[in-house]
Image (cartoon, rainbow, N blue to C red):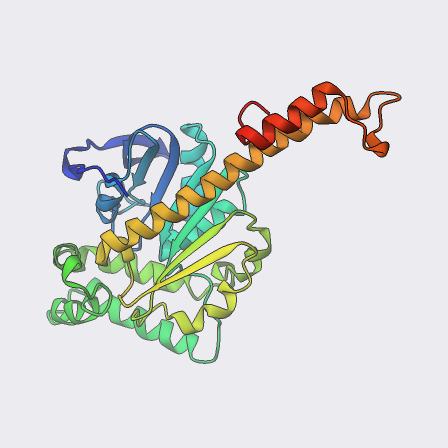
Length: 328
């Protein structure tokens, strides 16, 4: 796999007005659109490694959700539903088509909502997404525990930063993620209100996305960190298995593969992408081929029931056999 040595900080932020907010995003490359949606409390910085993909083939866009990175804050509550409305507006305003969405955590939940409402989504890559967890009797207790924990930060509790650091050492757990982990820990008091809102939203029945699975028809690549203590694989496996067209890759990491094991993620993501795009290209060629032979087959008095083909049909078939789909 050939990767660009892209310098992420040198990619200038752009801004777009959505819902009365200035939303910041990075946009680099041409070709198939890869739209990147980050986790709660994170930002477009998470996707630095993705800009090493071939930007002559892929247009990579990573946005900052409201209240994150360089985007303005919401007056609305933080939730996958509200983020999905922003993303749908973003797609419409930039007139994006045939989109691959990469989403992590609440960004993954947002991606699922968007894909269930927009036919322009051609593929999803979801890392430890929210909204698919089975809701047992422990779920509300766990959610209340997390909400109470982050409320300590809202109240400027002096011990919160140390406790938050201990918490985030269980979220991003690899050496490769140390820099990103420290950046997030440094902003813990600023992020606490967003985290309270997000974890509160997870209690809502509206944020249970399992009913949307039947509406997802595009291929889905799941890349799951199995050491994630907060979005646990075992509690999501049942939902994952219900997706019609999916592949699952597991890593012995925490919450965010492209931050914690970027090289491994990029290799797996790029391989999956190339296979899916190649299959799509073949299907398009095959459809064109069938369209071209349909007319001579359906001409009056020319039904090839007897196995007799016209010279033009023989030429089409031989061209297909000898040269693949090119020219057919």
